[in-house]
Length: 163
Image (cartoon, rainbow, N blue to C red):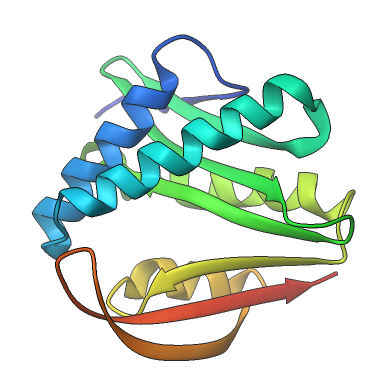
């Protein structure tokens, strides 16, 4: 059995690339998304990293690491003074089934509860395990729409939780 992953907060050298790469591999292999999804993740997390360097209140990232490297991540970024955005939530297939997703989500929502009145997120309907986890944490779907995005047709969903 694999040892449990350790969680740490903050970005370090190599993290932006590792998070981007993990998203690219997992979403291409499992959901058929193309390189534009990886580019979207890379661009958005890079933009956030620049903002965080100027403003430490811009949000927080948590990274799960095991003996093989980055096993997962999650972030809360600031949309406004009262709104946060849950972003870049992914668990490597090798680390699933150990409660790591719930650990990361719990950590992120504890941070968000202290700072925001509402947290929003964007996902797509095929991510049923993630959807179940979000709903069990109090999130509700606010809207859903079909989109031709990231190389295929998806049902884009928006969720929110209010504290």
